[in-house]
Length: 206
Image (cartoon, rainbow, N blue to C red; front, side, top):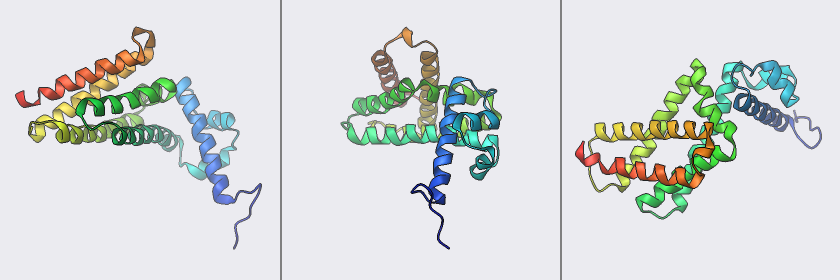
């Protein structure tokens, strides 16, 4: 049977549109009012999507907030990879490109930084996903360090340094988002780049 088309959009298109509206409302609620203020009822009210359609795309509220979180992480990773591909291939330029991309995303839309850095700590479901995501990003960082460092660090040392860098950067971003006036965006990028370089240069001493 041919799917019915309303307003130039078929059923799959309408479902995708409703899902996008729900996720946009979820980002607004989570990123502005926090976890406790994010309920199915409020998400539906904010998005203008009926509750029955919420469950068309999401099993429950936990599944929904995971999707909102995952979409932000996907943007951070995909944008970071694109920035690396466009940047000069020396390590400093690559670091500035990747770190600058992450800082830019959360600075331009602090709601995203609030969700992945702060809100995630208050939800058991998101806290587990945050740990998984941190491990994934640490592996990506380790690959970049391995590709650019002249040393040949052991896997244990490389993994430790990558986790250290990812965790430290997350904490620095969290503190900066709480008080952006403490330093300009470019200064934060400069400081984090130098810290990354200094830490990776010490790999051979571990």
